[in-house]
Image (tube, rainbow, N blue to C red; front, side):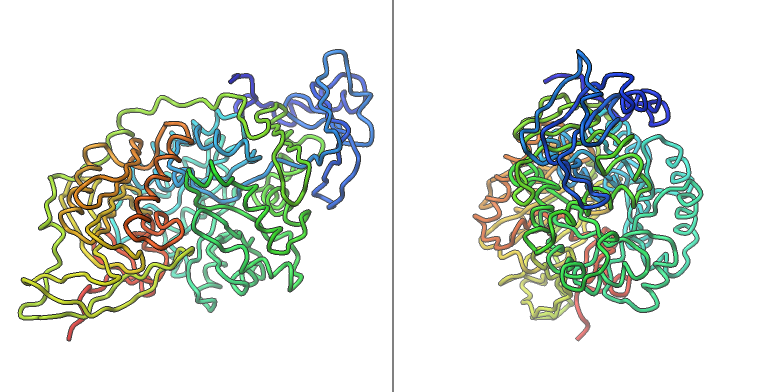
Amino acid sequence: MTPFAMTPQTLPSWPDAAPTLIAIAAGRAPADTVIRGGKVVLVHTREVLEWQIAIAQGRFAYVGPDAGHCIGPDTEIIEAEGRYVIPGLCDAHMHVESGMLIPAEFCAAVIPHGTTAMFTDPHEIANVLGLPGVRLMHDEARIQPCSMFVQMPSCAPSAPGLETTGHEITPDDVAEAMTWPGIVGLGEMMNFPGVANGDPKMLAEMAATARAGKTIGGHYASPDLGPAFHAYAAGGPADDHEGTCEADAVARVRQGMRSMMRLGSAWYDVKTQITAVTERGLDPRNFILCTDDCMAGTLVNDGHMNRVLRHAIACGCDPLVALQMCTINTATHFGLERELGSIAPGRRADVILTSDLTTLPIERVIAMGRTVAENGKLIVDCPHLDWPDAARNTVHMGKTLTDTNFEIPAPIGANEVTAKVIGVVENQAPTKALTRRLPVRDGRVEAEGDTCQIALVERHRGTGGVVNALVAGFGYTGKMAMASTVAHDSHHMIVVGTDRAAMAQAANRLAEVGGGVTFWADGTERALVELPIAGLMSDSPAADVAAKAEALIQAMRDAGCILNNAYMQHSLLALVVIPELRISDLGLVDVTKFELTDLIETP
């Protein structure tokens, strides 16, 4: 590995670089690099031209038919050999923490897949460490050999009054973050009822962002497209990634919002929405591709934005249109069209060489003018911050748990109860609000059949609090338990199990290792992914984390789990801003009404 790559901190601004770029384009000075012999894809016009490119100071100087006049004795010549030359790919909405990796290791994982720009909302670490945690993410992002832009988290807690976070984000925090050099806007505004109802805190955060001239991210996770949706759009969110069907996508772009269509490890929402372009013929400029949440295993084994791009093409989208959706459309959305997202003079010189626009093999990746990966191999360093002890000591349960902490008491004298159950939906973030008739033994409700117990263990303040509820859809059999300190968005600890003793073992194990995910079956730990930083991330290489994550998925399968990438569903069961039913440290939450609800229905 070599440390020579440009970073956002060392990249000259366009105005500073302009005299050099002009001189090169005019033939008065030599370029650092020239790419010739390729088919250049111009996303501004959806043309493919046999042009040449000259690069200097990390930016494009000349893009045209012949760059011969830009070549000097020390100019590096890259022969494209007939391959396509396309812009580096941009992920418009994602969370680094979902990859279980710190920003450096996330970049190391995705750069070889052609991702050269990312727009990340670190609201996971914000819930655990507050503004100092966001600053750590920002500072590490700024020293990477690609462009990682940070959005200031907007909602910690995501739903005030329904959960308790480790730290809260305030309008003053947002205003301060807007002055940081790598902050590109406000992260997804998840408290959509608050926006629609004119909540002063939400309005103040959006106002601070708008006054800074930056983009307000959206999150409208409701099927209601009536007045509440229109009120939300009027509040200022400029995009939304929570759509799951064509009608959602159409509704958003009709309101002047960008429809962000996601393909993550477990969210498959591109196919059902991209028909708004491929079949209805709507203007594709307002449609953007993103990942939202990708686990380390997906990144290492399947890809990142190249995976999303291939999928969009497989869903019938023209390759050049799909490419626009993860390059120029993204850059334009964030007010960065003059900075990245296309092969054009002055922009950051982010380039992919590929021999096919449909299957998209990523054969060479150039970021800010430097080759950073070849044939799937990273060839530059992605430097780490020195993460402080405060970020590594975040699991505070207050006591050792036992099986009694996971008991669900039944009404006195009851032989069975009707209980509300969280219903997991495969490949989607929403859940279903189910009911089940369950037996009572020794005064305790017993889960059976496809129903498991779920618990939310408080881990920020050491209160010893445990909230118990029920969940269905995982398919587990035998005596098992799985615990995770990744519990969007408040990030307490979620424990799902068929055996209360195993649930206690799993929870105590995570307190011992400082956070992560553990799976227990028949009294034995079958998988462990240590996530020592905020209980959310590892600073180990992505391949190592991916191997442990794959062992976790296999342990889940061995215990009867039938869902695709069920860990993602597990980690979102406390996300109290996505319908219909969730769990928090305050109780069971009916997200259709944004209120706490009883677990046991009254006879």
